[in-house]
Length: 497
Image (cartoon, rainbow, N blue to C red; front, side):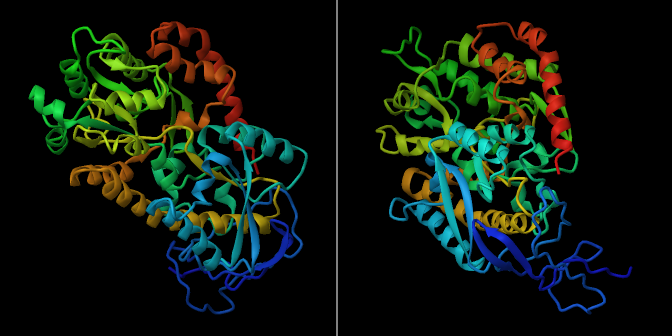
């Protein structure tokens, strides 16, 4: 088959209005062949389409995607890429290298991006995710080109998309979503609408919000329980097995001030139920190759919620409804066999007297593999729709290179966990297992953070697991309204330019 070369080979794009307020020239050397392979060889002039965009300021202009062979091959000629971000997550770009080896890797990532892309990275900080959403939304609705990139909580992304404020990443030249590193946590797969994609999430951001299970080795030995490492290697580490072990470890009359719990649970009840939903392969909203549907009223979801309610509430073996510090403290003091919580908890428990280990959240009883669910507050990258085509390309080049560079940052994160916090080789290997099996449940992205869609998704978890209301009644009252809001959201996302 004759190969057709498409792309911008040594394309020069003059950024009018400039990226992040400065004028610049962008050059690239990507060649996309008809069969999908890539080449950087010099092409005959008859085969090359040279695209020159000078003063392009058209909002929502549709670009033609191009395969990315080398994410560092774009020269932004000293331009400034402005990233809107919440203060508490700004460390993902602006980290103090003296605080930890992971932060040093983040600092190196930022410097590498600035060097390789020949750009400057500037942060516009807000106090938190909600404040960021409000500030950036108001600016974009007013027509202000506030930033080149938005980095916000996964759960906030649909708020921007519903208002038509986000660019379709799949239509920006230089963003290549076919690369595995662009689909960390199955984010692209689980959040696309038709062929449109509005966000990607760096892998180390997802790891910061990943949920796993710490276990107390002393209690395992004392009660002669099965070793979670052995259960994991023999593929017998299941949700039912963890529940069984928690019940065996619980004191008869345990209270918050005396006795021992089977497990101390973080983020009850949403975050702790997310891993159950994921590992049972059930989700409140389902994405089938871009076809998004409401499935909170499915039998599978009902079974997962019932299992969560049984294990966390009915069994009375779980320490729940407490702050993160109190949750960790219960485990550190040897008063819980398991700690269900984020990888970040390692910092809180590293110096505990009892020996401990770490395993992924157990698989569903009828499933074969382990999935690591991620909290909906993990951060994702978005690009505003009101940027010129040239600015979108520059922002896209930054995101592509950032995602690519994040592979090394993830390795540094895992190494730090292994060397600084853990006490055995298995724990570090299991963090790697978690990193390789991260997943974003689609409902973490599509929920609307308020109103009818939340009532039929988030609140089904909040109120159903802790027993405040029957799940069937919650769904009967809210499922139709949730479907209507979701369909409206999808309609707006499909029409985005």
